[in-house]
Length: 276
Ligand SMILES: [Zn+2]
Image (cartoon, rainbow, N blue to C red; front, side):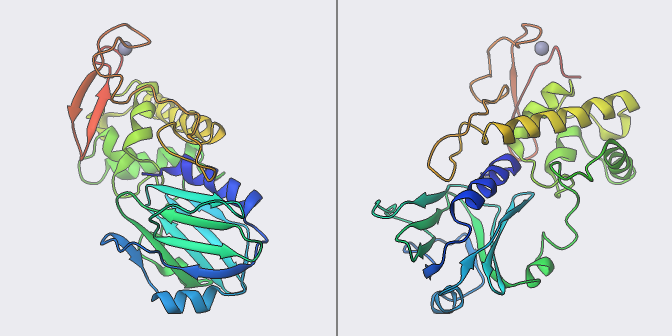
């Protein structure tokens, strides 16, 4: 699944590659998929996108906003799989859930691996969509400051019981983070995934804040994780410290064996020596 670094990277690549192109034909795919969420019928999508120009896209959490101008916004959200650019004359993937062909012969496809939204809104309407309306600040925005984060932790600590992993991955408290990048953040912050949020002291909150910023910044700079693909079908350059290959290996900091637990909807890898 794409998390914020992959979405931010795709957005930057789209802006260099697709922005300014004119749509020849927009199509909602050639392979029915139960878990792709569309809000338009194929004929309607084709009609609304024809002749329109791609504007400058923007990432927001796990959502990508692509202006289809004038008047519309294409939203790709909560997606995994591949979002690819195809230069004129190159072959398209066999299966795709979205295809936009451009007047210059190039095209853009999205093929999801698990689920995902591919929706076209009249400009402004996208802001009312569930998960977008009321979305909190994401870690790549300048408003994501230490003060903001401390307030968020206090708010979360005053509510239902949450763990450090829950703070990072549940209910879009920090939009864009997912199970993958959260593991490296917790390792850098020296926090056990189950560490209760209400017991975090000021120093731990600061360390966690810095771990979020540095991990996300690094992953964005390196073009996303190396187990996901970019617009040109190249894997990202960010290699996770804590992933399935880490289990059983010595911790790079203290040498103790990395452990694996199932917790909050997925496998967690952590160092029992470093993460408390
Ligand atoms: Zn360790």
